[in-house]
Length: 366
Image (cartoon, rainbow, N blue to C red; front, side, top):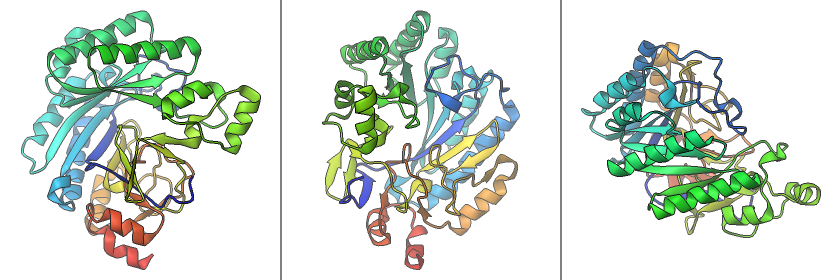
């Protein structure tokens, strides 16, 4: 990471995002997915899912009460595995949609999906979803790609808000499929993001060629010891080792002055971070509740859950009484990059004044 970097914040107001994995089952088996799906597991019980909806809104009530009015908006992102694979998905979506209507803050019910399903189910889902994040996976077969395209066109027809996240696969023929989908999106004026595939640094299957890396980062690839080795041995570049862009495509402000799309370096170990003020991650199938999907930093400055769905009261009570500022203990930042963060307590207070007011006085004790 550049030594001159001392703070990161989103250029535009950042809403609160709940990532709710309601099932691990999926209708695809992408090579880069890792533990993102497991078809040997059972779908979580519908009644338990409905209780989780209640917990999410109780959690948001507390978080929103501690934010200025212009930041009181949230998105509940229903995902998987593959979210639409859950047999009770329509009832779950309808219940969540009904709960949001009497809230004094704005809530959107969002769906993260590969959009690979029949049109009868898709047309029923479309009516109650405010925003779709559609993932394109180049490893899908021809029938799945037809369903994907047809369902995306349905969103256009109904004038729904959505974005297509294109998982840029470095394998030559799959890379070409990704480029064709980019062209398809541009022809139809569909908003899209190119997503580099996050992966373990030893897994060179998802390293990119120099040309691909430049295409993804829109700049010359950065020189690091890891990429020197990769270039010498494999003629490839590990984009995730040199930095990353925001998953949601947000512009980021560095050092309160420079706006960027791609951050060179993604190691913020020891930094002060507000990730818990913008994210919540729930694994329905295990009951675990985390502040964030990727970093999983908790309020004890450890990597781990903040509680379990079996005792949501404990989580809510701790949130009500005020939580400490998180000091990052990770060596890689993926999802959560956009949350305001700073190297020092002083810089953190300067950029964090817009969100949770309970966090600010505690900085003086660090």
